[in-house]
Length: 399
Image 1 (cartoon, helix red, strand yellow):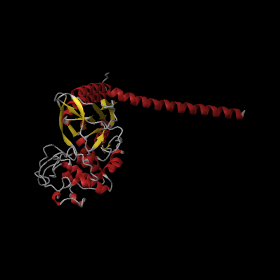
Image 2 (cartoon, rainbow, N blue to C red):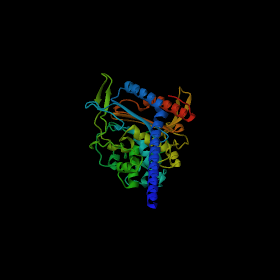
Image 3 (spheres, helix red, strand yellow):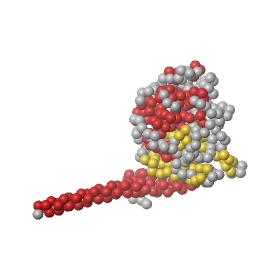
Image 4 (cartoon, helix red, strand yellow):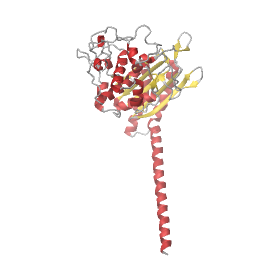
């Protein structure tokens, strides 16, 4: 009898154990469904509005493909793409299609600068020559800060350098194009935008980290930020998701393949490929201080002063522009931290709205379109998501 009781007791305990496991499983399943449902519920209306705006942009911009992503509260809540990443092969664009981001490479590089500052491996007011022994004396006494803020006096592109198709074996070699030219002004006195500032900055990053720039970015920036579709636009490398790039021919409204370029002269300032989702992940990390601390974020996003004590006219920080926008028919003034980019066959915009923990990026695979004109579509998308976030926070019920 005792043996029977023990057997029965064990069966009951096992039964209770299975019930417990089943209940836990149901609970976990409910959490997963709830999280997914919550994402759709919170931003369903904004996503529908965003899709309408994206279709409008596609039609008005006249681009082979357009891609967008939105991040709210440190997560990508919406990403979409329309059109073709390759017109000739009829390959549809999707959210992993990689576009040329042009000068939006600069805020990506600023994350590397921020990391090195956070690690105390560089100091902003150190002279460049303390890191680069091969630097031309003409470029001293330029500081790291002045490079990142475009107040160094280093010239920008001339002749056909923007669309250079020359392969450079190293950053040092690419610097020979400009580093022996006279400065435009005494460092710090004026603001003059030049991608070559970031070419020099990338040489400093290489020297400090003892790693090739693109390899360092992949290991220390892209992978930690889960930017798995961001990479250098290496011409002779097979990159499956890379879009075909186009120039829009206004005279007959057709597309022509963009000219062949080699971006080895400007990896850090204009030579990256990326997706809106990857750029939004970067924006999310900056807004939420998940990559480095708030102090470092403040340092790289603070508009820089000239030697006269005035902030430069573009409100340019260290790889970012930091100014304001007016939303909701000009009724709401908000801070925006942003950077646009143009490249051969590509146009980009990345905008962060700190007050709403909101990041938005749009990319297209055509050139000849001003990156600032993408604000026309980013702002109404921002308004849609801000409105929906406000409703969610207030508990208002809506469809």
